Amino acid sequence: MTDVLTWLSKSHIPDERLRNIERRRHKLSTLYSDLHIRKSSQSEIVRSLPASVVETLYEMLDPESNRNPFEYRKTRWRIFSAFVLMLHQGLRRGELLVLSADAIKTSFDRKRQTTRHWLNVQENQYTVDDAGDSIDRRYSKPSIKTAHSVRQIPVSQSTALLIQTYVENYRGRPSHPFLLNSHVDNPLATESLTKAFREISKALPNAARQELNDRTGKIAVTPHDLRHTCAVVRLHQLLERGDSMDEALQKMRTFFGWSRNSTMPLRYARAVFEDRLAGVWNDTFDDRVALS
Image 1 (cartoon, rainbow, N blue to C red):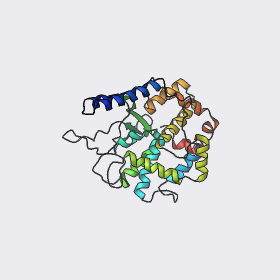
Image 2: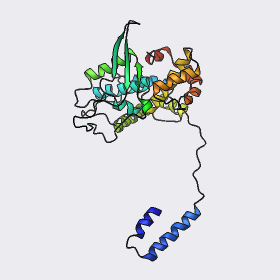
Image 3: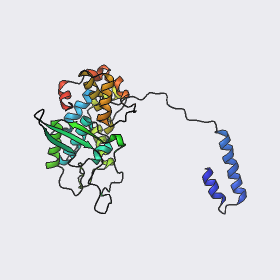
Image 4: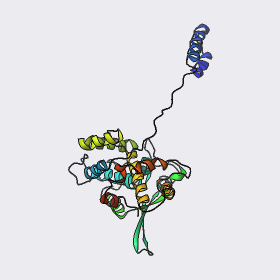
């Protein structure tokens, strides 16, 4: 307001009118000078998903499922691939949308005599043309959040095979290098992913929606809920394997791209010890998100 009045004072508005406006502004400023917004006293609650809701999502988003809310086969594979990467690898939405089509790497571990897969979470190295200009034309350009977010994380064989199947059979041959391709051969937009999760939430069975509401106070699933859920499950796995809490939290920082001073890992410790999160994850689900 003050800036606008200063600008108006340089215009041709009559002085009397301007003085009247200034008097009114001064009155409001005096009346509300001691008014402050009270900070919320509520503690932040980790929005991890109940296991029953996660299992429902697995069954519903399976590309072969009759309950899948998406009509086209390519869309089903695109959304299922996104779902698995966010849930299993704990990716942020922006990290997912900048992945290149060859983001998952593979090599043979001679010491263990097994094939290893990993994912490079980093800015897409193919997004600049010969002239040095970005080829990403999306309105809301996704990006890596911080320098600590750049990381290399293990990927299970089942996840690697899923993404390979999507790339080879359902991604198509777009002119861009991004992993997730839209139905019109453009990089998948942030808004499109958000819209897809609104459709997923609408398609949830009543029982799953009620469980979600009872446990989290929410009636919809968002992409970031999958990252929260991944963090809770992986911390539980690390503790079950015998890691101390400090050691487990340090591993979490590396896996999820948090800085050394970040307090984010501590938010998940409480959730891990709740019975609904420490007890309901069955062996099948643990196999799906097993650390490589």
